[in-house]
Every structure is written in structure tokens, then in C-alpha cells.
Image (tube, rainbow, N blue to C red; front, side):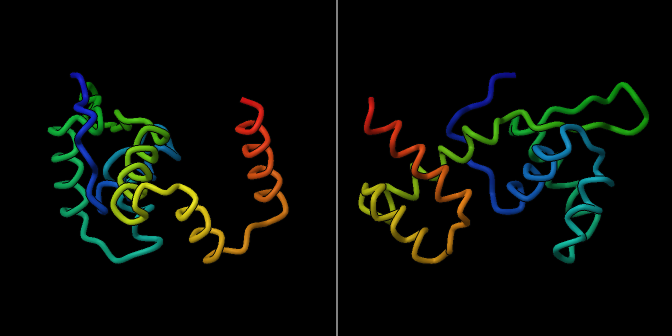
Length: 127
């Protein structure tokens, strides 16, 4: 099934995708238990969301065993790019500079993060 690139996951679906991106493959129960570590959620809600995500093509499901195993059908990078692009367009008037300045103003980056940012900037300058 080809994923329509315009499908944007909801906030709840993004939480599930984060778990699947981290674990690779997981059952509904494993996803649910991971989500419970940070918020209160009902098992049936997680199950229903994952069924909807399967119908949308956001996840794939191996139902060859008794317990269905799910994995993400969209990449983390493409999903991040999709959301960042929309955010730059809608919230920052198309200015990636404003986005970066806002992000750095709200979060004190570590030395490693600053080095990584500098490396990215150096690469952009040399293109």
C-alpha cells in the first residue's frame, strides 16, 4: 500500500509512531505500556488508534501470528520534515531562521548539540 504523503498523523498517532520508531516492531500491548509511562491512556483507545493508523497506511501489521505485530510505515525523518515545513510556513511566515531562533531561545542546547548545529551550518555554507 502506497502511503499518501499528505496524511499527517494526529498527536495521539505521533505518540504511537514514536514508540514504533524506537522499538521497530511492537504489539498493541507493548505500545500501550510504553505510552502509560508518560500519560494515562486506555488500552482500547491505543488499539483503536492503531487500527485507524493501519487503515490510513501509517503503520503496517503482521497478522500471521495470534498477536498482531505493528511497525511504522512512515519514516521519522519524512514525518519530521512534513511537520517542520508546515510549521515554518504557518507559524514563522516561511522563515526557517525565526524557527531556529525561537527553538534556541526556548531550549539551552548542550555542547554536543551546539557542535552538531555548527557542523550543519558549516555544511550549508560550503554548498
